[in-house]
Image 1 (spheres, rainbow, N blue to C red):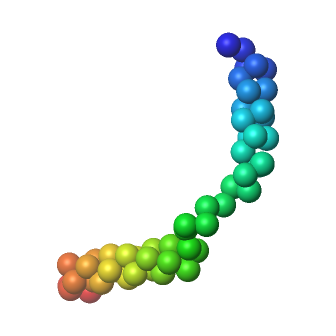
Image 2 (image 1 turned 90 degrees about the vertical axis):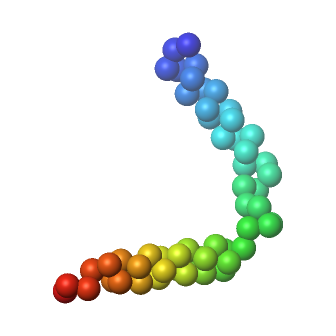
Amino acid sequence: MSFHSAAAQLVTLAAEGEEHGGNHDSISPLATGGGAFVILMLLLWITTRFNRDR
């Protein structure tokens, strides 16, 4: 498989994916962002608990 044929197949695959919109209705951006924020705050809290010497 040459680079040209691989690139052509990837372009075809990407063009087919655009037909469906690409976004899933089941994924809520607010829930995803809120969940990531909560996880990061939890990790920050854990890090500060272990780093009491500063």
